[in-house]
Amino acid sequence: MKALLTKRDELRDAIKSAQSDLKTIEAALRILGADTGRVRLFERGRLKAMVCDAMRAGRVGNRDIAQEVIARMGWEASDERVRDVAARVKDVTKRFR
Image 1 (cartoon, one colour):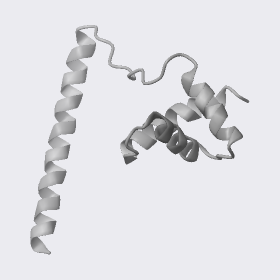
Image 2 (cartoon, rainbow, N blue to C red; image 1 turned 90 degrees about the vertical axis):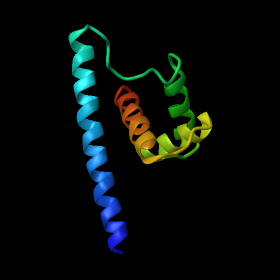
Image 3 (tube, helix red, strand yellow; image 1 turned 120 degrees about the vertical axis):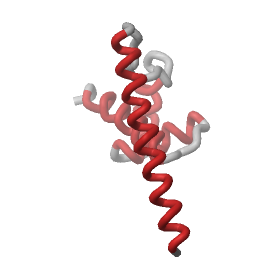
Image 4 (cartoon, one colour; image 1 turned 90 degrees about the horizontal axis):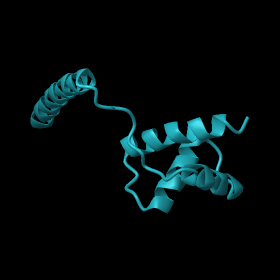
C-alpha cells in the first residue's frame, strides 16, 4: 500500500511539473503569435450533423451525446476526450435554442 501511495505522489508531482511546462510553452507561443486555440477535430458541419443524429437516436445530455460521437468517430473514450467533445457538443446545442 505504501508503494502505491508513493507512486501516486510521484505521478502527481510529474503531472504538476508537466502542466507548468505546458503553460510556459503556450505562453511563449502566444508571444510569438502562434494560435494555441482548440484543434479542429471535425470538418465544418460534421459535429452538428452527428449531434442531430445522436439526438434523433434518443441520446440526451451533452456527455451521452459526446460518447455517441466518439464511438462514431472510432476514437478511444478517455475522460479527457469525453470532456473535450462534450464541451464542443454543448457549444453546438446552445445554437439550437
